[in-house]
Amino acid sequence: MRKLALAFFAILISCSILQAQDLDQLTLNQYLDNPRAITTAVPIMGVSPDARAGGMGDVGVASDPDLFSIYWNPAKLAFLPDGTRSMAVSYTPWLNKLVNDINLAYLAGAVKLSENQAAGISLRYFSLGEIVFKDEFNNDLGTYQPSELAFTGSYALKLSERMSLAVGLRYIFSNLTQGAQVSGVDTKPGQTIASDIGYFYKSRDYNMEAGKKQSFALGLNLSNIGGKISYSDDAVSDFIPSNLRLGGAYHLKIDKYNRMVVMADINKLLVPTPPLKEGSGGVPDDSNGNGVKGEILAGKDDNVNAFEGIFQSFNDAPGGTSEELEEIMYNIGLEYWYDDRFAFRGGFAYEDEEKGGRQYFTLGMGLRYNVFGLDVSYLIPASAIVRSPLENTLRFSLIFNFNNSEG
Image (cartoon, rainbow, N blue to C red; front, side, top):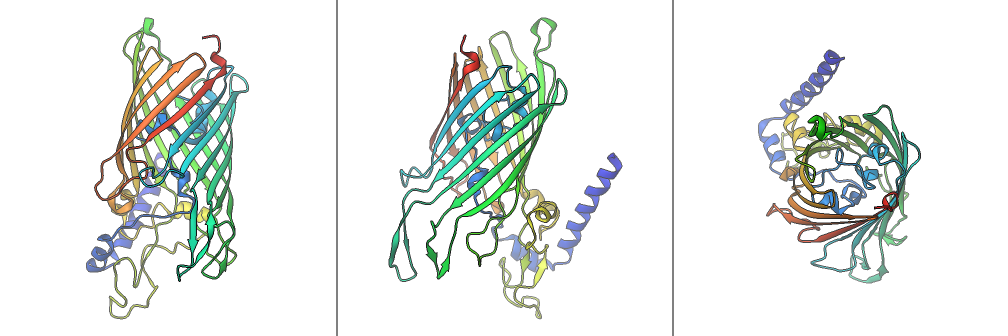
């Protein structure tokens, strides 16, 4: 299996290198000098819904299980404490420096069905506030309230004392135009169904008396694996943000009251990279003397179905292997707990500037007392080029653990 896996990745890398070599260097440089972010429909689906992860650089695939595991890695639900009956709500202001009516709200609930099984549901709602639509002549077409929502159900099962798997099913509804006619085209809400697949591994538990002060966890989550979205009968369908998230966590129990966790995630959009075409990507028409506008010069045709796009996304970048690596986002986070009641958090997220440029530091705090939990996070931008809609914004999450009602 190891030889087979190595051969597979060698083929992917070779294909990417050959693609890049087919381009003349001048054309390739013209392409690489331009921003090359991959765009999708419903990008809000890729935004962290909770303040806990938001305070740790948006890591979460291998963090301690909680209700927001439904988003980060549903397999973690199987490791919730026995008897869990919990709910949580999170609120995130959006572009609060400009407007006060755009926000992301998230509601989740989970229950431990048995020692080895758990289930959870969540509702994500993104309100874009009031927007005045106008035509090309600046005539008022009316005031609308666009919104997007996603409803998710997840089921997790322990395969052993240390390992679990999970599946999730999601309904996505994106109502951006509320049926208005745009540029003479009748529009409709975009709808699709998507699924998640999660894996979680947790090593030994803490045992201070036996000298076991360390543990680690691994997680993998394939999210938003589903069909494309279309906003009219005539429009081309758009990919949703299918994503591969892989990460780990290192736990250290310092003493009876103090512990800390260091975490790291990597993320890869499972969406095809748009090919380099004649007359696009900084390449002028007929740059090679005999080209045809729209002809693919490098990369692969991205007009494929959602499942083809997932596999194609690993080796279709016009810039070859180096560009494929640019499409990976890195997140690191640190969480410190005192007496499992007070938490302090920090983190950093990095995305290549040519692929979106999301780069920011985060800070956060958490409180747990009896049935109640509160998390707060704050985002500090690290890029002077790309500004985050969440910069200098406080985010809040409330958690209610009814299984802990006895203290």
